[in-house]
Length: 186
Image 1: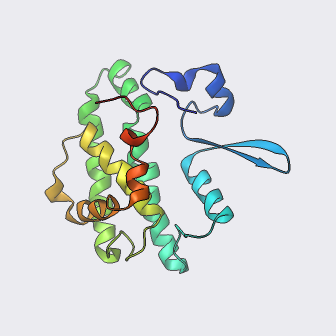
Image 2: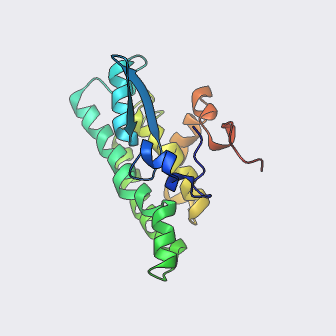
């Protein structure tokens, strides 16, 4: 179900009944004949990885999995929530602060950290030569960084290179916002 965040559809009663946090995504699954709604990206991806382990989004090695989770959490809890629409509206409307400067600070700090982490692990992708959940987090984060902040790609050569590799993959391009059925024509 498409939920237009700009129009505030995440606050509609129908969506709040699916996700009380007023956010996306929500995955609907049927287990033992019962419909279950799973909100939150991390929970959804971990569930899908356990249900459909091939192709794997999580490395086999415990250390590589931990490093991947560190990168995922850098984006998931360190960058993305600080520049989502709900936060930016609060910064602008309630705190009466510059939401662009706010987003640039947190996006920059988070991408600096992610770039530093990736220098030790990157191959074709963030963790070697296999696409992982960390790469799945990187692509939309860089999209958001380019959209919401003045991002100097020279500051993030590893991330920009990995993003370009990810964008060569058909399934990554198919997941792009502009490729979705509810996308607003440019």
